Image 1 (cartoon, rainbow, N blue to C red):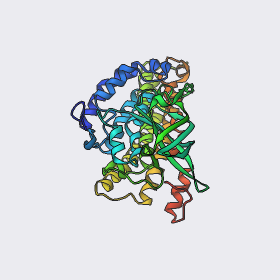
Image 2: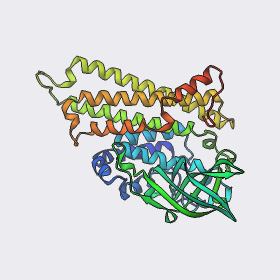
Image 3: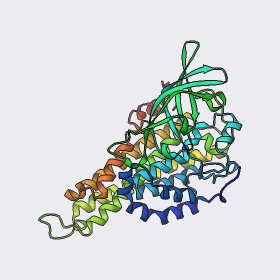
Image 4: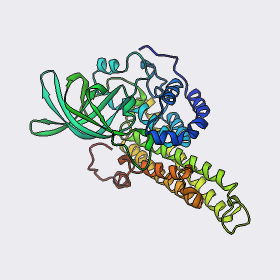
Length: 385
């Protein structure tokens, strides 16, 4: 593989993101209005290594640990939720394609490790077997960053002897239509439009069977399976939004004097109590999430598979951490009073962004039921957990 630059270390990426963060925060309204990341910002994020950080060195990436990537997502989401989400998806989506044949996988990522992949796991398409490949049709939603992706994929249902099987098909952007549907309440700047395919021929080597395909490369990141990996990354993005909300409300509290008060909000005892509570809850959620991420990475480095209890712990901690992040943002928004209502207030955007994150299926509360079943030693009724 030919890289455009030497892979950056996790510390170098995090430091570079820290330098970009103030400018990102200042452009939050611009990003939201455009409903996508500006091209120059996207270039900056590529330049510092954000999109290649999870790729292994064999493919020109940095091969950073999961918990190190999570720090980057948090830092970016603290500046702007849409930027954190877009980088999170764009840096990790290639992991869903490791079941492709190795030559195909290499070809998709050839030339530069900054090739961005996007797609959808929801099986909203159909794949019909024909000579040499499949004819694919479908309409997939929530394809974050699809407008700047070099490759897109959609999960399809294939009829195999009368039984439905899930098959992922990879297509070039020119082969599909990006339908402008991303007019939403939160994470507005992620450009998560629908992608539509109409009778597109996809060569067999650009498809994979979701449940039977084996990874084509051996790397620690590949041994952290879905949905555990996206759960860790998504929860980290929520924590970043919450950390940004606390910073926002603190900045407001030092100068805002509430109606009938004689001192700034920061001097209010109830605010101080709630602030401390929110801060420690956020720290606890982050510590728990990172503990699970570090343990998962240690297992992956050893070449072992994550056990079912490990995966249950990751999934449960991600749900809990995301819920705690939302509660922290709720506090910050309410503490801001009437000031939070204005479109110029970052707190209203934080509120909408974090609650958009809570809607993702990998952090839905029902996950705790399945995790609890694992803890209780009961059988679970989900194919992937």
